[in-house]
Image (cartoon, rainbow, N blue to C red; front, side, top):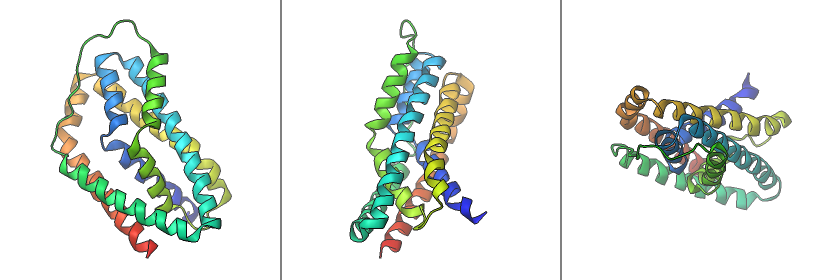
Length: 207
């Protein structure tokens, strides 16, 4: 069971990062509300593919750093920890701000375009770059089991696609959307607390 703890910890931390609204979250919400549920789901699929790519790069990059770059790996931990603390503060500070999106039709449905824009939005999201690097640096064991390298990218794809798919379905219907928006303050603050604790832990481990 201990071999699975890093897997669950990494996936849990990344899920909290995704739940906290950022550019990717807002894009899926806007697509589902202003266009259609199908295009929102297509955008969610693009988010999943982008996250899987970052997961694979994080695994390969950190494996190399752990083996060959002790000082650089330590610097990455400190920088990642500081960013997570900063991100936690920003999430907490803006938790009370509502999410606003425009509603209304957007012409003929185009799931392919929604997928592409979702994928590009995920790739260009500065939040996901920092969160992935910091989470993997904090929670990936120094000597992980080989299967962990192969399991993480597809599981990240599945988790991100499912989460953003839920977001697309929820925000394309009025009642689930209202329930989430009513709970946004506490969802954001819970995510901010977890991310902040993770950042402090990362800095302490680097020392």
